[in-house]
Length: 170
View 1 (spheres, rainbow, N blue to C red):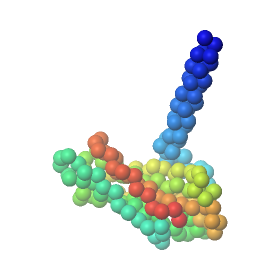
View 2: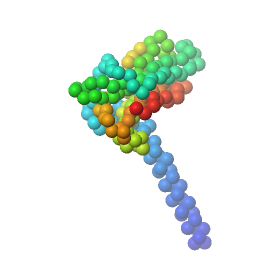
View 3: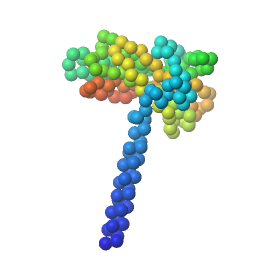
View 4: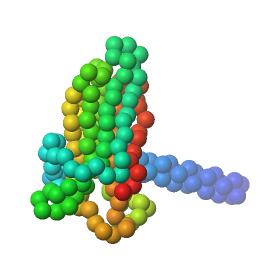
């Protein structure tokens, strides 16, 4: 009887621990724009109109609609440039005004790592509707090989939700 109780206790503990790890791993999905605006975590707020030099590629995200507009299209990119006298990187998302379905939201965020992509800070998501351009907050670039950036984007609708696309780490 004692061994059955022990097996049950160990199994229950493993189940609880596993559930905690799964719940804990969703931290990136819980990130918000407020986590990196107003100077938080070393980020600097920038205007949505700021343009810089394109790095690390760019891409587009789309989602098909069942009715009305057949899809929503948003383009995303990583840019770098001078912000307040410092070289910084940021993400940008531009949404199409003519190809944008009702209820669609374009999302962009930037991941920054300081340990060679073992872990990262997520800045965003920042949301935009059709016909808008939005940037993430900016983060200082570095010559250190351990600091890298990537920009990710997604289009979300009441149904369906588009895939997440990211630039390569830069």
